[in-house]
Length: 498
Image 1 (cartoon, rainbow, N blue to C red):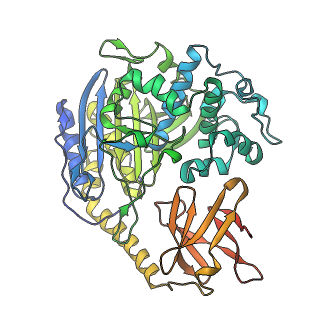
Image 2 (spheres, one colour; image 1 turned 90 degrees about the vertical axis):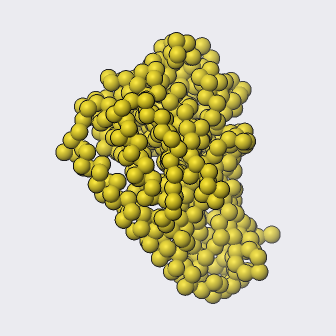
Image 3 (cartoon, one colour; image 1 turned 45 degrees about the vertical axis):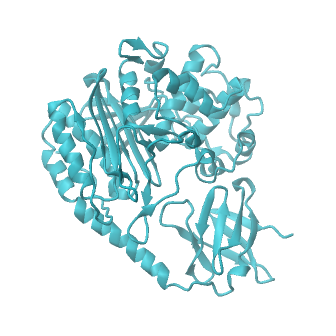
């Protein structure tokens, strides 16, 4: 009998409610009870679930609150950040453009972007869109990956130039990297003259009628947006949401469970939904062909390769196409099993350890129920029963961490003025440390705003990447007694003297 990984989590208990579940399949009533038992014990966890079979929606429901302060429930129309699950949309957009002859997935990308260059020993002449979209490009760039996801301070026109200075080799057989998708989207932009957000909307979202899915958060005015949670002094706190600047083609979309149901139905039926062919026939199916072969296990799925925007795996002997996505305040699971004509999506409002696992467990329960598998019922019951302990344990870990912070000095030995200033990090961009009120300081790095705390002596603690527990920020001092450099996200930033 398979066992789930041992994890723990915890948050402060509060009353939670679930929206009425639309369980149209009798077996999925057990899934609804399972989901409700989890969310009632795991505040502030909230999630939405959709299960489809063929062209039918069997279950569609929201659980918990999308906004705790206003006591607003999650509904099937509530939009969650889906992080890396965005990749399937980017890959399909490229495939649709290729089907119309606008791009060639197997042509060198220099055909569309002559300025594309990679530093030696990399060979950029072999790079195609298909290789990028199947993670076989063979390169990575830390500045591109980090800045597009967290700081949002890279303009599209600078992406290829930064890549040309910072790329380094990785395995060409398969190396999962956001950079490949970011560059693929830039190639599409150069080929079409349109931004990738516009392309995804025009090629995929609008034709499929996905009305609560977007790659542009500022356009989601009036939507039911779900607040995300990370560690906080009371066990958890709301994390800053994604902005337009930090949405990218490798992880940059908001989506509702209702729309996810339509998306899954389109995957199972090659975009034929409700008797209507929503997209060009054959294109969706083409994105399911495996191009990279590798072996790994995640969410109890034995992965065997990567197609275009989809992981290919085996679950209990059945092939399952899936993509997960996680980011501070979000965890997404999107999958479908063609042999049984089933698809499942679960979107959650936190990536905290045990809560991130919830999406996969709920999805697997749905697959088990619809395939008549009962051997894991005891595991599911034990998992639901453990949620209170998981919640309390993690909450205490976070509270203890914040108590330790509160006991540290509020001012570093040399005072905050020694840190105030602007710092350059080359291709990692620039950041500033500014005074914060009457005492203290704040780091500003693109879209990031992080208060600085004393960690140990002159070493400070900074929340970069944001929404997690934070990490030490080492510094060096110059002869004038002021900070000469700081190290943030593993990169050194040098003071800019005026």
